[in-house]
Image (cartoon, rainbow, N blue to C red):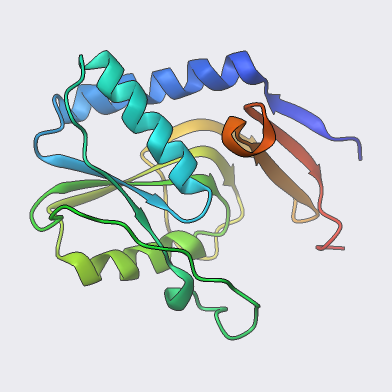
Length: 181
């Protein structure tokens, strides 16, 4: 299978901006809402969303943190996982939390993130935002409220999100997963 470009750089930027406007429709000025990106790659999306929201809202501060789920994963002992850092320097108790990841696949990462997040308090509401939703592949009943793009894929494929910060460009690819074979 040849890699297939799902989002090019221009589509990527348009998608990020659309997601921000969807958030503003629901959360207004973000005075009661916070953003938490799931380590490692959901943090890139969360930081981009934060920056874009602040630009649109004319420098209104949006609280944004990062959440490491390493020790909450159900496959923690099966893999060589390297913990990241959690940075949540704000209260989530009785706040609206937008949990952010780059790709939603089985839902197991989100389940682990929900468990980890509860160590910081009980939010009023939790919503999920993902750049790519690989529907039809859930192991747990989790659904995103804000979705950049939905794709249909099979188990032998993987989604690769390239971030300007790491890969010099913003793109999303669907390609053969050599590990799954």
